[in-house]
Amino acid sequence: SKFVNDKWMIKNGFLSDVQEHKPWWWNIKVQKLNLSAPLILLPEVSCQKAIEILQEKGYDQAPVVAETGLILGMVTLSNTLTSVLAGNAEFSDPVTKVIYDQFSKIGLEDSLWKLSCILENDHFAIVVHEQMQFNGNGSSFMKQMVFGVVTAMDLLTFVSRNDKK
Image (cartoon, rainbow, N blue to C red; front, side):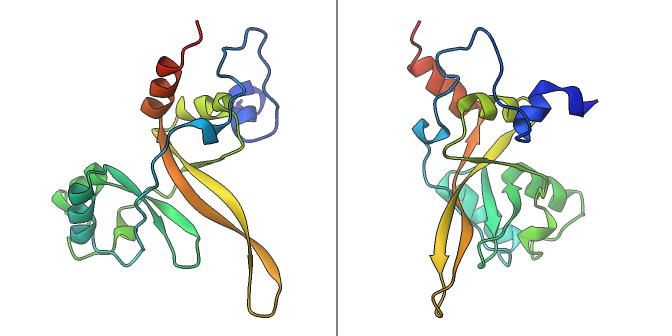
């Protein structure tokens, strides 16, 4: 059962990191990764335009975020092309028709160990940061901002470049 799986429990915040022989990078925070600012697509962007933007900017994937800041999912070049070529989507359809809406989020303050647990099952994680915002009447609310997208290759590159052993 996933409820007795330590990695699932850590990934979902129910258990703190537990391992006797921790690697040197275990407790380093996600913010130490050298992530570039993500390319963000709004939900009304068409599949055709998304393909053009991703190719032009040299990205394989991008988060789709509503103007309110709600993260709707992730669009990838390969999934968009596959969906269009299979007839499941049209080039003119909005990217929301081809997004992955099952994705993991991780905070800048989370550990690389937690990230490694997520990346064992997922191809990527969306790095988010909570930000306090105020509206016109002075009341505040917390909003999640997309800070980046991290993959196993990003983690591997960090560990190999900074290997302490």
